[in-house]
Image 1 (cartoon, rainbow, N blue to C red):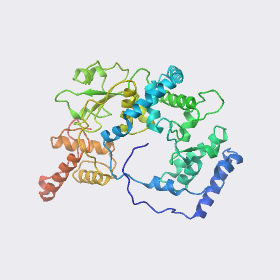
Image 2: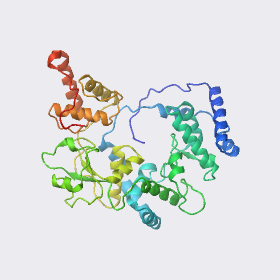
Image 3: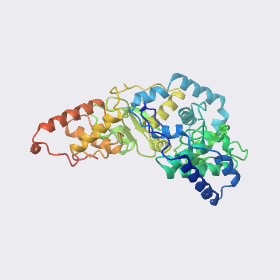
Length: 414
């Protein structure tokens, strides 16, 4: 999962363990990998002479200093150059995209949007050696067991002859190729698109595109249905209904007065749809469909999923968003932690004050907004933080008898 943030400068010192500890760990790992059937030749090629990569540990431990608004996220990724490049590549590889779309039912514009967002159409595949990076993270990472399993899968890919260990390069966290598959994703979904008997997600665009489409199809992709569509909400819309978990048939949203921004009829869809507000009630509104859930399996970022939809739309000839960006500015992680702590103190359960705007925090914000007669969009905007801080300051000087905590949600709230 990839988001662009401003980063903290203060980082933990590397290494935590001594070099000899890594050598001992690696020896034990090699023995286990060999017992699982990975050949000695592969183990030698991938692991001989490697040492922990300081830069990988540094990147793993970095934490975002500031969150990023949807408008900022979108602006960085859907540019005129990015759209034009996607359109040119669709023409250049038209026969390939035709074949992939025909076989898997995944729109070519969606595929090219994933390609553009993941690696800038293959321009930034990553330069970290995957076995060395994964060994570093398996030894000294926050999720050692996860990265250990990824390392084993990476070695199995080498062992199967798909790529040489020295050429298995990618992101610091182990993502590989044009579409940035993790090793476990490679083994589960990657396919030989060009029929040469091996899977090369780095040099073979047919392999990369067929593999991405295969992943999406098997994750539940619905052909000829959108991911997300910008909509206009009616006057007096109940903002509490704008959340991913609140699903209604498209006809029900239409009956409530929800319209496509371009005035066309909302698309027919087999499943139910939701309304999401990525930058609060003042920003753009989107209707999201079953394919949105599929994109969220690829990357759990709401902004990422909506950006896939918007880049695909513009590559297909559609225009930019019609709505304004929404409230300017984003909270820092420290500010969001302060908001979460304040909400918890006032009885609105925001969960652990970790500086991450998850569903529990959004639900707490929404309950707070309902109680204080604010637009209940659940969005942790700077203005909401300011309101919460004023409320907490007032509570600090009030009698405990007059400031009962809001331990339960208002009627009808999540």
